[in-house]
Image (cartoon, rainbow, N blue to C red; front, side, top):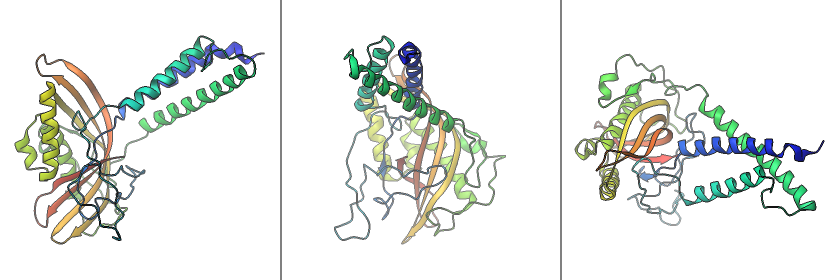
Length: 318
């Protein structure tokens, strides 16, 4: 029995798998990497259970790269304007890849193969390539599905899973931390469960303040550097006639990557996986332009003058 009789079925399976992969890309839209982590700005944070892969390098920072010969490995900083605040959309490369993939799949569906009818040996090799493509796409889709449905843990010792609304402190009751797991990159400052719970509150407070364009509230939560980046994003949104509405923030999983001290200043880096509803709204009509429920995994770094309040000093994507 010829494999060619099953080409329409294979094509339909490939289209379905491709749609699942596109949905995964939409749920994992790339986001900005900005801020400072003291002397570790150009050093990747330690991997954790929440973020087992290395975080992307910081692209926008006011910290100067180490001089040649320094013991800290420097990465070039590339200023980049990222539309959409926390949630930037997939770029040109993703669109081109999806276009080529779609063209090949629909060619397969209608019996022309990935590159049209070349006939003979080329047609047979094309069929082999198509079958391989179906298998690869199906594997990627299956892996994504497994990852999206794996059980969620709490903060490596963890905060309870609960919604963080406009006033996260109102939801603080009922949540507790077990004994915190050791930080993968070390903990020089003795981070406490209260610190970790405070970071969870700040996740909701910062996102909510950003969605409300409340720079006054953000000033009490961010370093001046991070405040300048967010103010720039809000100004760009206003210029385009849109606002970035953020709501329904919920921590799904988190753990401490590393904590250290530099002079009289403390730093703590935590990996956070959270759900959020992120929408771009037309200011004139109130219509939703794009966006919706999403899930993100990010690495946030907080800093404080010893004995002072924690402030968000950097965000990196995984």
